[in-house]
Length: 100
Image 1: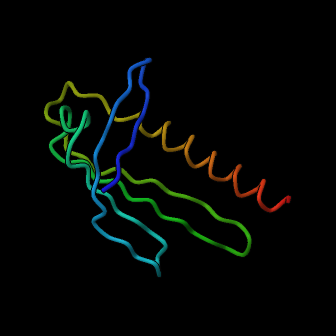
Image 2: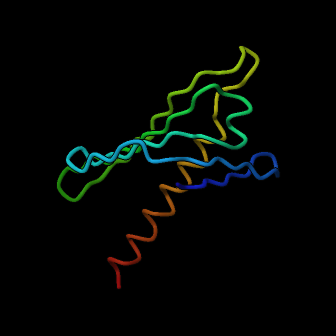
């Protein structure tokens, strides 16, 4: 079980997740959110992270599958921004390791 923490408009948001699937061949992991702030807005929320490798280049794709509780719920743009920042932090870490 993983817990993701995000800050949105200065307020900490928490999501408790379980790993639903790991596909090593496709280099993907799928998480299902089971508790937390997201479940106050969405009936279901599934996150898939996929890494595509071509030579020395890697690209990461985050996919969100969700069902809103109602039409007034906004799309999870701040969570996408959080995931983008995490990906950039991981990339920076790997680049620093390669330079040492």
